[in-house]
Length: 122
Image (cartoon, rainbow, N blue to C red; front, side):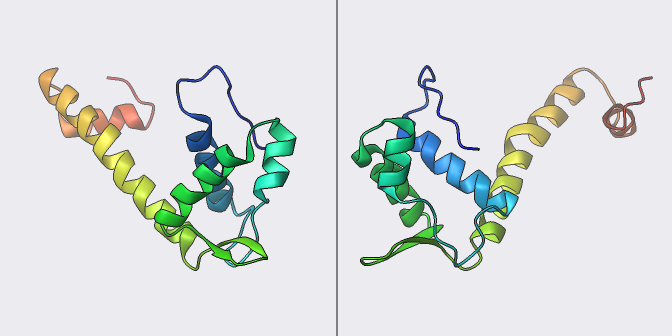
């Protein structure tokens, strides 16, 4: 179920793009399948269709969806694999590297960090 946080600092068009990406990763929208129209989303959330279009344009630029003229927007081939690879890289760079840097500062060994990740505290 799509949800927009109107109180968020994240722009609505970015939230829309992220919702579509999440639904692709979850398998809700498979490659080759059509995503909801800009009108459908704008009516559901009572937002300007141009805002939805801006979010969809982000996805087109990233090669996640493509437009079939007069038909709608569709999920690109390998979009799920592409998104997962991007998120894995981001996860490593944003979480794992930071965790290892902090663990080193605190004097934890790699085995201690692994034990903590398994839920075992020394």
